[in-house]
Image (cartoon, rainbow, N blue to C red):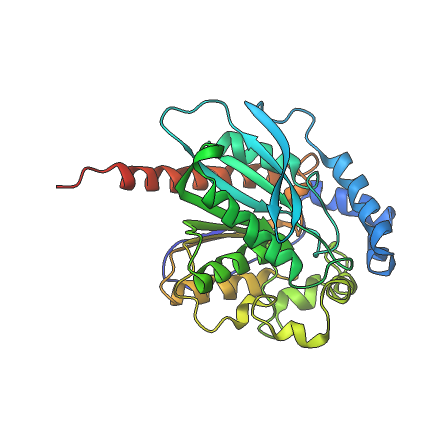
Length: 340
């Protein structure tokens, strides 16, 4: 059973004795295809490898949407590619928005990487999803990806009415490094006074390390997110080792988390980041931030873009979407409540 904790109890991530059969089968296929060598490839070769995996793992029959729109938005003197996923008409006024940042260690990934996931979220959460193709390293190093993510969120907030969005219900979210970008976008929004972010949705984000842990010891090799790949990603993204001490890179170093938006954090049992994810969720909760934490115990890091092969990953997206729908619905009810 997945561990889901929503109280003041200590958040703990656990793993089943072995990955589920579907995860184990896919892991074998990924390693046979050279997964262990990702951290030795050129950035372009690694991008091509991930793109092949993403194409193979795309859902054959994703949910039907009202529209999927590719466009560009202005940000930091350039034009960023974004993709809008619009659900079929929902009763009421403007829709909530999830500004989403894809995984890829700041080096890999693009708008296709989480396409199936974004389609599921838009449909089942009854929200618009705006997926952002931020600029990647090594061509664009820290903090370019973060500033692009922040600029895209600010643009959505400032242009909410023209894109059919309720400005009071804009959330940020992302998986892996995209989750880090979501956290750090919320952090910048606090520092700069805008935009207003109502919630953050995080899936196995990079939060830094609180020190040695069981998950790091057990799952840093053989479970997709290899330690060598993490080192390679940071080498291709950061300007110098000193950047690792920046709280925008390691959110566990943020001194005051009390102003963070309410948070949903989902991690994986066989993920080296699992225990640090639980620690970050606990620190948020201890700082007074409402938190929902879940560990999908029988699968691996990256499960959001492995939806075709792993049924528990599809189920996890459905639970994520149900929570997002409830969050957005609750906010709508609060905004529309009569005042006397």
